[in-house]
Length: 196
Image 1 (cartoon, one colour):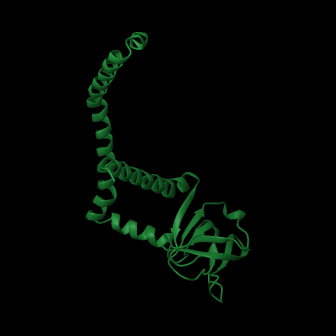
Image 2 (cartoon, rainbow, N blue to C red; image 1 turned 90 degrees about the horizontal axis):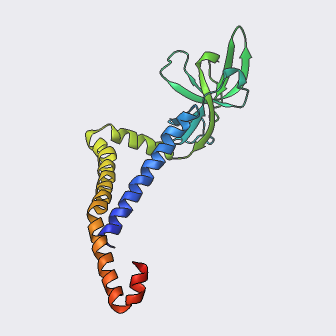
Image 3 (tube, rainbow, N blue to C red; image 1 turned 90 degrees about the vertical axis):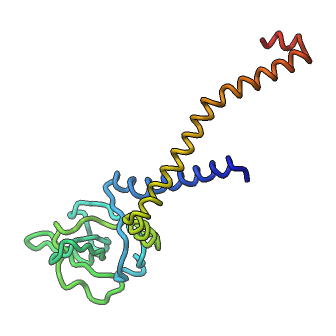
């Protein structure tokens, strides 16, 4: 494999990875969604451990029994839980009874409507573990250098080579055209005059 082909291949792979990262991280945010990693087995087999769940923000009044919802725990709002809403309770305020698919009993607390963040739309198995690994890797200096510095360097290197070939390659191209025109003029003088 030639050196130029290897460089182009590396540039293509880095570009594709950047595109995939953009799609995975930024496109859901544009549509009011959020990516969540499934850390426990309480919703298996619907949401397997290590899966990536796409949660979309919705109005709490539109949630019905059977929807998979993500909510903040009433006692500890820093913890997010994703369970299935099994009942909608309209006491003085809107609340939900939730239960994990793999658990026999429903949660012992009611989830207030204001604690519900959204509804889970889809789940991709095992992709969450990969996302966690990449996130932890980026937080280290070496990981940051590998994940941000190396692709940036490869992309800048490719652009620098393209600029150099545009600037320096122009004279080379002109010399080739001149030699070709001279050869053409020697072999077929009439045709060369018509082209000139």
